[in-house]
Image (tube, rainbow over the protein chains, first blue to last red):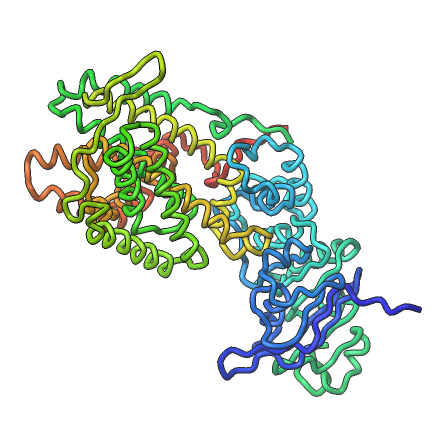
Length: 251
Length: 340
């Protein structure tokens, strides 16, 4: 049987800032149709890893491949256009735009004609319908015309995910989607992500272990900038490294 | 999801008609209120300049504090065409616009990867290079004296030709150019390109992560804005019958920033128009009472920045909103009310 390369592969990644080594020999593979989790203590290098994988930082060494193509060091816009989308730990929206406009500008058909200096967007009813459908998908129906800055924190989190969904990604990176959310909102978000799990390949950084262990098919543990353990949630619960750390108690 | 057509979709809007009604009638009453015809030309030329500048500052969030350079390049290019090539209005205007766009494109290529304070400082530095060049390159620019006796060429439309020697004729040419600029820019800011610019202003990083080539948008908008400054500069050269380094100075470049901010360029397309009119009226009306009018104008600028950064139009919008007290939150968004 021929070897099938996972959808997204990071090999031997190194990243340092000055004398500080942040990522060291990181090897990760995310398979099509799976939800991959990344966990680890604060400062372990999880978000830096995301930033390297999605093009915000160039790795000092190593390679990132997506869909069999080398995307190492490409700028975020190029990586995004290839089908990699992400959300941010700190909410990153177009705050003055309404929820609907946030989605509209992120749609590929709108973005790809972004240099058109004569045609108005407000007459593109197909794009409007599509943007409204994405908002419905994340539970923001009825809030289309609310400015992003006026939405509640939970709704802004949902909108953050919706903006990441709008470019029709082949893989979705979510950086701590439950960060700062209360119990009710976390439950709502968990339902949303379980729903998205049926349709998207996802990679999720998360501190909420219960949340991550229920959501993910495979989990990688990063500590001190290295992957110290990998496996299914069940395998990780049994892993001696994980058990020896604080993460073990949570798992 | 059907949408009502909002004013952004229209080619000509009610505020445009009001503005042009006022401007077209201005020569008939301006002297009756104690002002003079030439003031109209100044106001309209600077309105064009400020509207183009606001495409950069208000719509894309890019602070260019050396924009006088492109105004000046337009003025010099127009003057050089008239003095050294041929007396031609259209050739002069095209040369003014293209020269300013070329200068803007060269600078934009250097600075478009920057943002914030670094971007602003680079625009100042590049603006100073143009200013210094205009002072020192005497054989071309005439040095500190500038280019003198720049012609006001005749408008030649084949069957009709109109002399621009009279200030009123030049004023109407400037109003026509303002009309083209307003309608063109209104279209641009409400187009897909304009929405992308506003997205970049709000969150440059996010725009990149949804696939926008932010550098290219910043490059294009700077070049376009410089071209509009070049158009204004060309008209200015005709108005002054000269082109000189002062319009490229940091001081002069600061004036357009003040006009744009005082008017409310951050919240309204019309902010620069209002700000320009207020500046020139303040200059002439306050100036009639005191030589220190710029001090009072500066204090007004500080007051607006401190207490109402949205400017005069922002204050007006607040007033209207309070009166209507609809109580519905609205974004700066480009979408009107939804129905269906």
